Length: 415
Image (tube, rainbow, N blue to C red; front, top):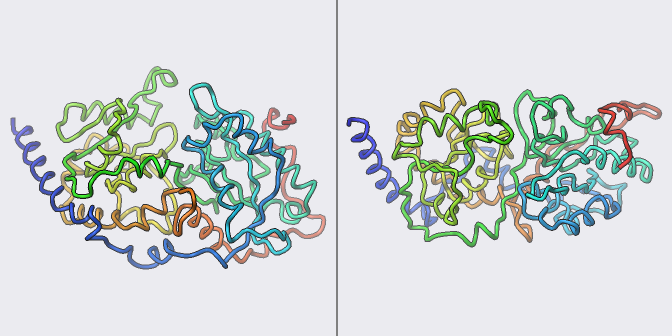
């Protein structure tokens, strides 16, 4: 009885909090990110670097997209939109001799199953084939073995090219990419699939679709905790406990009957609207640590509750994740209700003011056309901060570092 009374009291406080936050949602109360992070988020990369885009045969990119246009809409689509952006970007140079960076447009996730999931099995051979092509036809790869090249690799586990973590770890990063800079959605500390110097980016979430579902800014946030998604993956993890390292199952088992938690496997047509009515949005790991929920939460001003141990978040040098989000250790999921209800109202309101900052939202999106401060520009900022290249980038005449025959035998077959 005491538990239900407490729940009712908290729900009343949530309604009060929703009223307090209306001014924030209307844009009357925002807070600029303090210190260097705010400056980094608003940097303009134009004039700070030049990028040469390799003109590859269409079989590596546009032909794949023409065959399956669904690739434009899935959460791995950053590789396609980054290519389109660079083709018309002010940082593009047509003179490779003056380039700071070289970009190879390979759509490694645009090989979809009937259900729309990307298959990574051809990706290593496709990437290897593209690298062999540029190494044969241009001199720039060979002078650095890729150290001044960057690749967008938005697979579940980046350039390890597999959707199951154990197999991804067993494969490791494609050996030919060991010196290149990887721009990838996957990020986890001390993991073989995240190499030093990588740029971690948000997954693609459709900006126009989210824009179409915006609700009046004075709508109260009457939902305390919100989540829609799988708690178990019985088809791939029939015995349970492996999927999401058990964290999602723990959310369901502990809070399915808690009135503060609006959680379900259903994905209603009001999903985006519901996030805008929520104070906290759960962002737990699944098969990989990341998902589009993080983007959606930031865009809709819902405080992200990040449940993924050792995750490396997008643009961590520009976005103050500790200030806008809540981090909960996977082992602490059973205490999630007490953790969230113990956060003071003034702390919650400050997080909402930061989330209301337009530059925060913009940094998480890949809009068409591109806009100042968006995810495209944050990627370029990350590349610009790596300049000038160090002495270890360019090889001495005759020097070789990479082993072209390394990797699983299947990866060495022609693509």
